Image: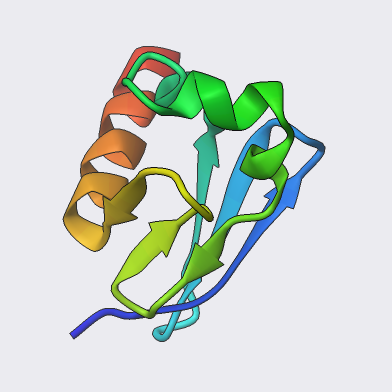
Length: 82
């Protein structure tokens, strides 16, 4: 089962998510701003401090993303870039 081993922010615009199989998922924060709760994270800079439980990426007093959601958004982002 895939787990998140690390999550960081790159360049203030991209989530850098490392998985236990060595893969890296890069997810543009702009994708998240389309969903409720994420814009508030941007306003007070909490977006710059993501955390992980291994199954979720989350923000203090904010929303969270499940592994399935991360993969779905990443796939959609890749399709949109083509």
